[in-house]
Image 1: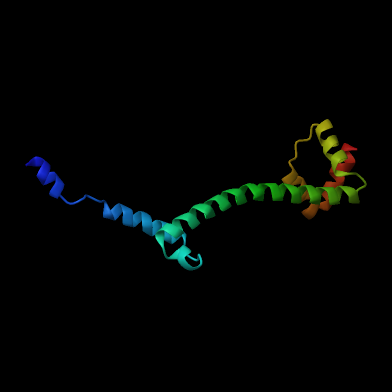
Image 2: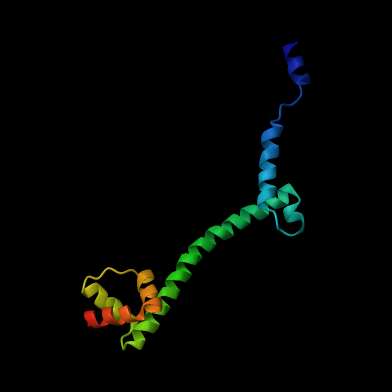
Length: 122
């Protein structure tokens, strides 16, 4: 009798939670083209891939900024008659701890101070 009652009972599904989850995924997929923004299963794959792209993008961003800072420092250093590699060697030799971001900022926005620093370490 108990087994019969259990078999006749409707399947319990947490509709509120699943609807919330699907709504969240479709919300992330806003602005995507076609089925990627309308259908849950397609949108789920698209959103998952977009998260992977954004993770990779954050890593690439750091890489690209470092390259940009090095190019700016190199350009400013060569204006003052020294190469980038020699400049960084002199910084390490004289135990000056200025990171590339600060050096690039000095080279771009405060060129006079950058020249003074180069003259001091030479």
